[in-house]
Length: 323
Image (cartoon, rainbow, N blue to C red; front, side, top):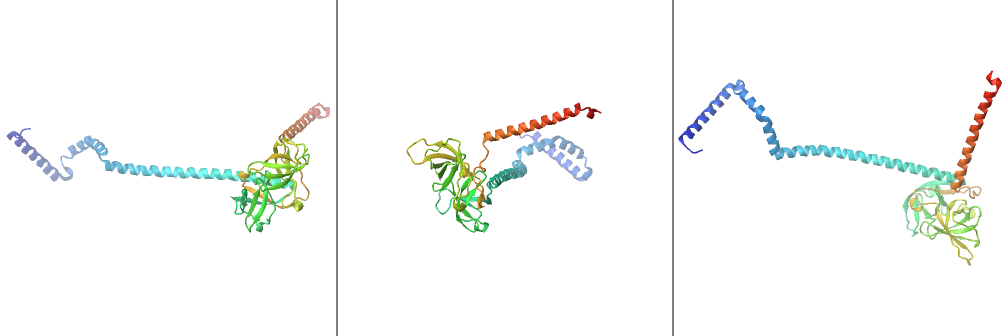
């Protein structure tokens, strides 16, 4: 618009109208005649102003985002804490169940062999004595443990005690290359000496070079004089390989031990030997024996059911019962 006389007059007129409206609004106070027009304008332009202000006001947006982010973070932290507690609870229950199972198996083994044991937990591996395969247990002389005592678990022979302190003891594991124990084969009763190899097998030298042995044959500890360091009848392992060479005075076989030496947790130290040699009674049942036992139990149950059914039919045929 060009700066002309008419435009200047229009500007002066608009300014005068604006002052007049302002004066009317001020003098009217709460009963201002412009309230209706103001409310109408607010209802029309208010939402637009809020939308525009929300879109163009980065500070307000940032504050709201931080507030909502804090709420979400607190909720996420709470969920993570709950999940961690659930995982810990599940892990604790699984560990507890595993230890209960280990304890039950160890007590069954001790009961089968009539061994008096002191239970202990493996708390460390290796020792200052320089043995390559040792563990430390949380029981010692205060618990009645002494050197050269047999250590076992629910699976079989673990090792022997070598060093004892007041509250702890060191156990040399049966798979250590410096470990040797006398063995006896199941059924044939052939004697031998088992030596550790530092892995998951044992070398057993049978005293009889002509001994008849095959894969799957099982062996237990032969026992020592006065039951130290080994009590008799503790399961050692199964034969997995037979050396067919001839000419030697002894015969060597490889045995897979029953005990998993890398998974030790609960063990028992034999503080009281059995009164009688348990021989092979501590060995677990063979799978085929378990199958035969289950079949025999089923036959007994079927015979009992058939007998009960026959008795019922006899009662029905008895005239006295009908009367």
